[in-house]
Length: 141
Image (tube, rainbow, N blue to C red):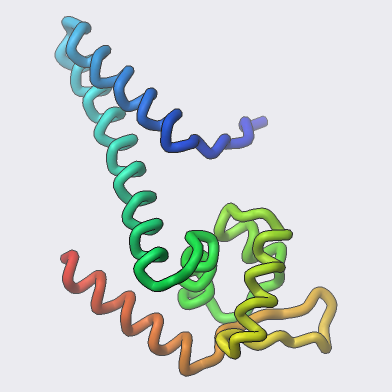
């Protein structure tokens, strides 16, 4: 059986990145150097992406969890609390709390006719988010 993946804190990821950098400097084998430097680069990239998400969420006046949920919901169509929690890596209680906020703000809709309840972004909000994501990916590429 596979092990459950553990989400690293920023500090833990930075320590692992530093260890790989130092190890890459100390080993003699060229292939080992490549391995350790590539692992350090991988962890550096993860740190930067996480920081960029946090900065973007802050700029928009959202929490990081709200920002991640909105991006995920813009890419899909309908979600249950459990599906959204699995897709985002957030706890079900955090997802439920944010969905209530989205519904009250008129950003999302709740279909209570089914169990479990189905949540979706309002179509105009979803369209605007997808357009913004496309513009962002064009600017990066």
